Amino acid sequence: MTNRRARDRADIVLGEDWDRPPGSVETELKAARAQRGLISLNRSPLARKIILFNLLAMVVLVAGVMYLNPFRDSLVMQRERALAVEAQLIAEVLEAGLPAGAPENPLADGGLDAAEVLSRLSLSDGVDVYVYALPATLVASTEGLSRSPARPVRGLDNRRNDTLLITDFLNTVWSGLSGLLTGGRPDPVTGTSLDLAQTLVGPATEGLTVLNRGTDASGTLYAAATPVFAETGQAGVVVVTTAAGEIDQLVRVEREQLLQMFVVALLVSIGLSLVLASTIAHPLADLADAAELGRDKNARKMSPTRVRIPDLTGRPDEIGRLSGALRGMVSALYDRIDANEQFAADVAHEIKNPLASLRSAVGTMRVARTEDQRNRLLEVIEHDVQRLDRLVSDISNASRLDSELVKEEEEEFDLVRTLQNISQYHAEEAGRKGVDFITDLPTDAIRISGLEGRLAQVFVNLLSNAISFCEEGDAVRLWARRRENRVLVVVEDTGPGIPEQALTKVFNRFYSERPEKQFGNHSGLGLAISKQIVEAHGGVIWAENIRPTEADATSEPLGARFVVGLPI
Image (cartoon, rainbow, N blue to C red; front, top):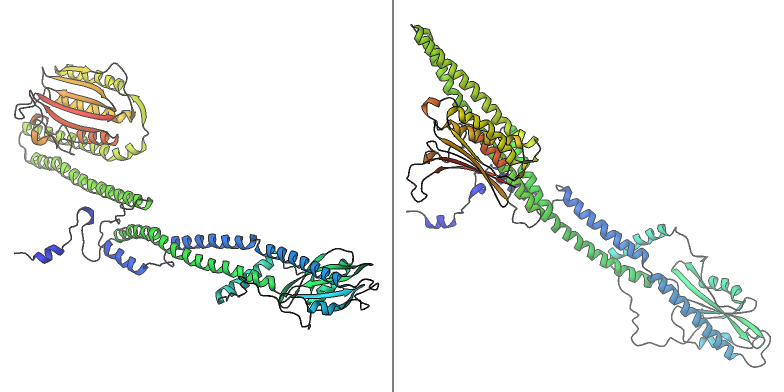
């Protein structure tokens, strides 16, 4: 009986993702991921770059908006236009109050009580009016004068927005930066509103409305001056000034609202950058950690384990592609390592056989008594030496094949012409053995791209094997056909055929199914090399028996057939 509950909780892991004991690469990856956490700016340069670039883009955007924003200029223009209109209206009120037949200088000689007129005006808070008689004598002003309160306006919101400490700080920083960008040039006039008003009297006596601005401890103030005319000509000047810092306060409120939005956008950008970094930098860090852990463990020879790349192929982006490519590359690398280990084991096994035979023959040579025995032993030694020489040569060619296939450049060539050249030589070889050699090749050229010399080696191996298995009176046939996007090259013979159990083994290294009289004459690497060359060209190769009927698989074969399929 089994514990069904424990069995139900068990996880089924297949393929390369099988679970392994603690201390493996996956365990160390989990530990590194736990230490890294969600936010790991100190361990991830890529995450820092993502956040930094996003913040720089945000800062540049906001700075550009604040620098190019015409809000302040629009407010100043509107306020100065309103001051000019207000000054002209007050001048018209004063002109309307001048009596008929007033003296030549009515404002200075008592023709009009300007202070009494100003007290009856409903002026906005912070607005001061100065009345000057010619040439520049101040006769009345609203400073310290009781005046009628301004009439309330329904729908006009005069509330001041409360600002936060962070926006005050950012506003101070921006004011300093804007001062540097504008050169830090002060306004033309520095002083009180009265000082600013006195600077406008002279230009206004020319009969025009003039504007100017100045600064004091509270901020920027604006002024407008316009002439007052009587029957005898210009009688004086009216100057209207605003409260210091009025426009600055409006600009400050607008700027603080923009800064508040900037702070919110900054926090959102940081959050999105962290999310983006976690989806990009963390998977890349996992891939790098897995590769580095496997490299370090195998380099130190400490419990070397197979490198396990995290499976991120479910992601529909470049990281998923990278994970799949790395997993495929690692798998191919380990397959190549396994193949090399198997090849080395096979080489050692194959070399041991002739060496054992040589050792036995040499040992027997010492005790041989007759010349005939010694001659037979010398024949055995010579045969084994030739076998070793052939084996070493084939092993050398097989070991260099991979690198040569990568280094050589593919070229386009006519496959039919190559087969015709090969068939001429093998036709003579078959004729000397009494074997009929038949070719059935297309008349039109079949051009393919590949390594002509390597593919010729494949067909030479197939034809040589076919002829070697044939006796006098047998036949070998070479034919080729084009099929849509591929070409088939077939080598057939009427020899003994291939045992059924050997059909899938004939392409293995060092496997040879030969008659006893041909023992040791072949290394068993020819078909293995041929398969490697064909697959390197994206083709396929297989072996089958020729039977009188396909319905009866147990019938005696009429020969063997090797088929090579190559893409066009």
